[in-house]
Image (cartoon, rainbow, N blue to C red; front, top):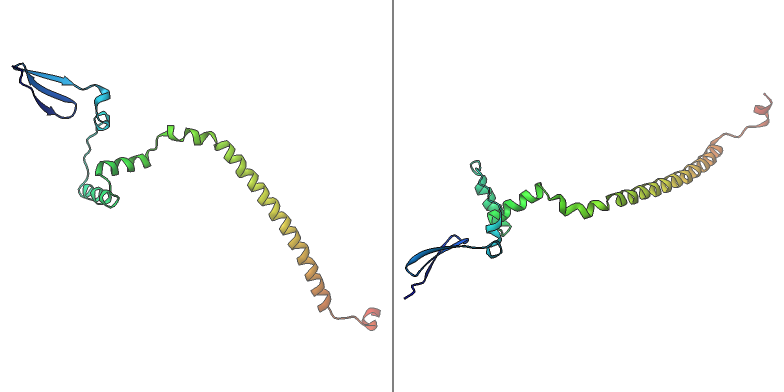
Length: 140
C-alpha cells in the first residue's frame, strides 16, 4: 500500500511520504516563483524607518518590499534600460543646438529692428524738442 502525504517546506522543496519513506524533491528553476529566484538581502533599519516605509507603502497601495524596490530602482536605475535612449542623445543635442541658433538669430533680428525703431523715434523726439534757432543765434 502506498501512502502519499505531501508537506511543503517553503516553496522550493516538497517533502513526500510514500512507500513508507521520506522523499525530497527540489523544484527546477522554471518551476520556482519569481520571488524565489530573486536575490535576498537582509538589512537593518534605524528606529522609525520601517514605520515610515510601511506608511508610504500603504499610501501607494503597495507592499513594503515593492515600495523599497521601487525606491531603490529610482535611486539606482539599470543602465540597460536607458541604452536605447542614450543612442539618441547626440541627435537630441544637435536638435537643441539648432534651436538655440534659431532663437539667437530671431533675437538678434528683433533686437536690430527694435534698435532702429528706437533710434528713429528718439531722433524725432530730439528734433522736436530742440529749440528753433533764429537768424540772430546763427549769426553769432
